Amino acid sequence: YTNIYVMDGMNTTLQDEFICKEPTPMPSISVIYHVTFIIISALVMLSLFVGAVTMSMTDSMNAMKLESETQAKERRREKARKQQALTLEAMENDSPLKP
Image (cartoon, rainbow, N blue to C red):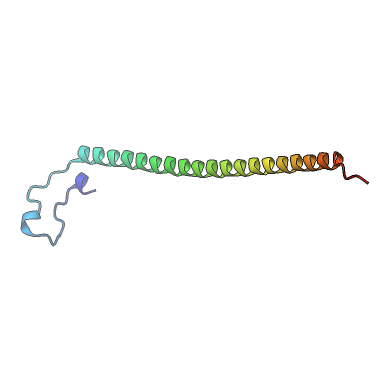
């Protein structure tokens, strides 16, 4: 706002060396500054959004990997139990101690 319409006649409590002696409006510079600021802010927000989505996907992929590893262990354990049961049954059938 102050770049477009200048601070001419505004009452400030600044020291004398900071007071504007020859105010000149610069609307084109003001527009360039604000457009650049909005674009950079939008890119930063987009970057934050992409980072949040990436982190969420990484967490869900790790959870899925852990779940599939757990299921694979359970399947191997069940297969080992069945194999052990078949081995015990075969040993009992071949046992010479039958009455």
